[in-house]
Image (tube, rainbow, N blue to C red; front, top):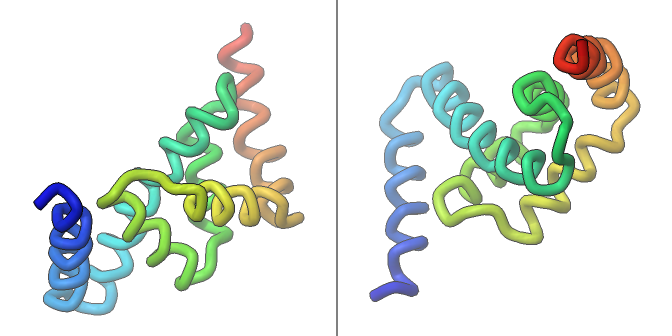
Length: 111
């Protein structure tokens, strides 16, 4: 039964997405992806302002990456979650976003 719980939870997420309008699906998937992403960032990048970093990752993710991260939010972060987030973090546009959004938040926290 324990092994079935993650599958049932993932199925619940899929059914919830199917019942929504396209805009609702996107919002639900992004919210779930934010949850998985924030867990990875807190664990892997302690001290980085989480909210700006999550925004940068999600705003630079592809639809496929967002849906994969959303699915991982149900079962908890996996090595795949870490790989996806790390891949997005390495993109030039994400690094630019972090410099523009994350660095000011980091410096404000240090003041």
